[in-house]
Length: 79
Image (cartoon, rainbow, N blue to C red; front, side, top):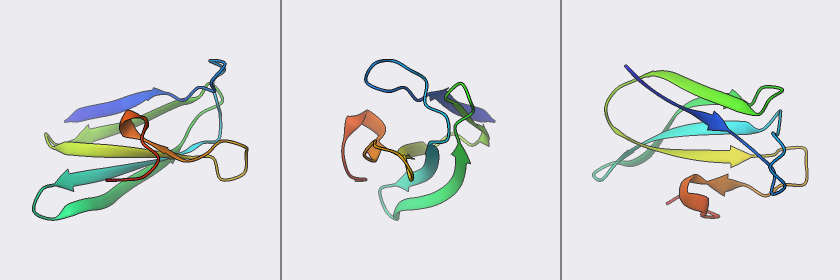
């Protein structure tokens, strides 16, 4: 299967540990379905493995810190 991963960084490019990363499956007929969640490592990394070929969306949430939630493509809400 495929994988989606990356590094979450602050506006100053500092890696951010402890950020919740949510993975959603997207289908035009059914919309969004939450399928997985992980937390960034000490180096800001996250990785979702074993994914089937499909459309996905990602949400990032800093539940205890100063950063606002953000979604794939830099939007402020999940669409």
